[in-house]
Length: 147
Image 1 (cartoon, rainbow, N blue to C red):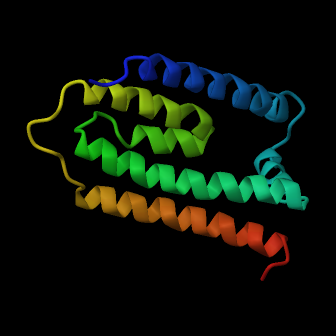
Image 2 (image 1 turned 90 degrees about the vertical axis):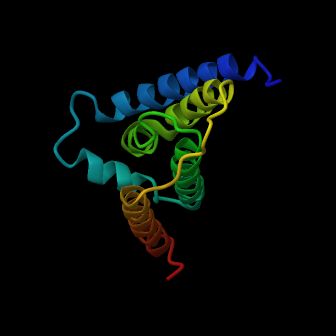
């Protein structure tokens, strides 16, 4: 029997992740931010070793989470599985990863008759996610003077 407390715990974490990250995003990109705000934002993630450490951590964890969410989502025949990593990278992984975990808990309550599999589109999508993350990691590593 699955632990029933996990579903609401993951939902609370998702809401906290959404509120905490987007309160800061709205403050950063709010009134007065210009057309170069996104470039400034990305530059600010590599301004010092502490910022780079957190940025590298988020990129690697987000990359692994994206792969796992798609693979596990397909295995569990979850709907809209690509929405989680896409919203995570475009909005807040702190929101979409716990949301995925909550929806996975719900999916685990009714085991599938046959496990789903990854399709070609999934492989291409994961390849694109990997390419973008590697590009961002390379920029951060370059900013850190490691290459």
